[in-house]
Length: 134
Image (tube, rainbow, N blue to C red):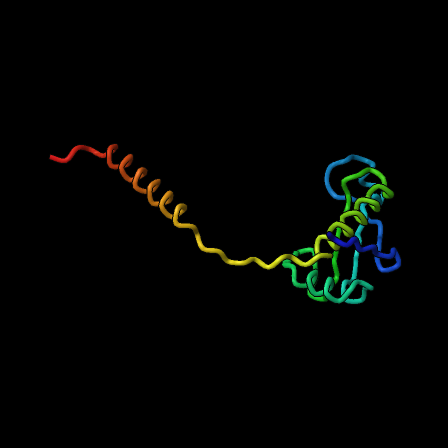
């Protein structure tokens, strides 16, 4: 069972910027894109969740531990704000529960036999394709 973590809006720094790309006049004159910054180290998240988030190799995470996100897929600022906040919550909640450690297992005898059988079958198929030897 995964626990769901909520983030207070006061912990998130949101600024409106102009969106990039095609879109005509609307893009050029309206600041509808959202630039979201979330400081993981200064947040009220549990320490174990902070550690897991900072250990991720995510290019949206700066060296100082600030998560930077840009939302510009919608036409309105409010929709982009909601989208950015939802993406932040998804990112944080993906690390809310620790991953189960992987236990190494050995292949069974039957699986080894099947693998060797398929290898020899493939080998004979390729041998049949070759030119006959004199």
